[in-house]
Image (cartoon, rainbow over all chains, first blue to last red; front, top):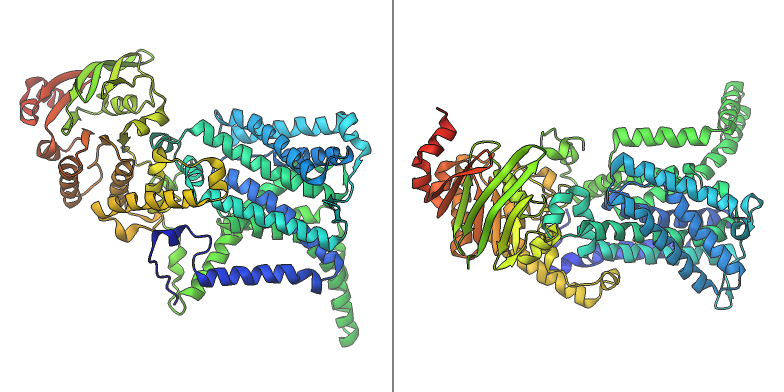
Length: 380
Length: 252
């Protein structure tokens, strides 16, 4: 058992719950910082994707997980950020200024898209944001003087204050830095009145209003902040992908981002990071399994003389090579998560944590969902 | 000048006159109760006062200021707080977070200072926490501080609503059926709390209530409504024995 002794109110609003907590986060930071030393360049590149997706996740988590507004158009914000950044870089704007401008532009777009959100919620808002994303995608392909349409737009490597971040490892640290900053800023907002107002709007607009929350302002703020983070992620995304084309920022990417926050666990920043790990690493994991399963099983077949293993390996490999398998696995996992663990990977993580911190007194019933007939259990 | 004055307040929903020319005065430091059968327009008056509905006629005057057209989120800042009949808590937040949100009307920090969590924000947060802890002590909610609202029983949720309203530091407290769904013991507690809120905290209470025992125990004045129209006004005993009121409740 582990006890946290609280002796002051300030303790409850600290960044880390206690020293133990801080210690683990420092350890995690050190491990992540040392990863490029032990990993091959390919994995460094894949982990960079995790960081970029995690920034997207934080962005969407603020909107969906904390404010309760759904968006099916976040790929459009990512695209606006990416194109704006690439455009400014191409025209010789310094890197930091280009990122800042990209963030400002996406924030402005976020406020504009947020306006209908003041009157809409649920599925209607999803449709409205979807329409926005479709329009923006069309803009990307038609506004050729800026985006070069389907011919595509190459993105130069980042050079910040004369220092080149062209190398994969350098870019890894750059993305890590921005992820940590966005997590820190978001966490600050969430432990301050603004974050509470967002959660209040999510759970009961009418009560939030009666307690003095200006719903219109705070919903717009959620949209603007979410779009700003997406703009930042877009700038990094542009460098990472190196070549922008309109068909990157499709509805499928929006859905993938929504899947990220749901699988990660709605309503927690941990969830955004867990979800990003899942979304970014599933494709390379499938790619690895595609080759390694047949290879391992055929070597087993060779060693034991049983040709059955080799046949199974070939079968699995062939299945994983089929087009659409990746999307299928994504979908299957989404269904399973919603059915079995509505709080996503964060929910599972919390259970494991509680298991160890209350060991040996863990009770499974702690997390059992009880059937009650109060408002919280009804569909809204 | 009266503390809170409702003057010829009316609202129509289509052809239905939900509230029709209701006037009353609430004195500072008193408990004023509105009674009436279901559908009499009691909660509608509350929704008009907290500015969720737009009245079709009449005036609301609070401390000499006309608040008939104040936007709903400004009402809390003026010093009017309310509870809801069908509990409207923030259910996936802890009790403490619920109460802290009630301090929103007293928020002074800007977005950017919160983004960086500057020392001023930290100091304000501790101040809010101190204010909230006073209410927690007042209503004996210590043991539920960290619980999520979804995991709390109905009776505690009801008290949490009261606590949240008190955390806004109100001058006028609107209680919408504070005893509904509570057992006898909890209702007694509620009666004591309402008296303490009036006597110790000096907060004026405007209340909608069905439990006549609670009404006569705590109210200074009572207004009876039926079909959106006032039937009688006076002390609890006067109103209770008024022939119109008896007819409204018992028929005949």
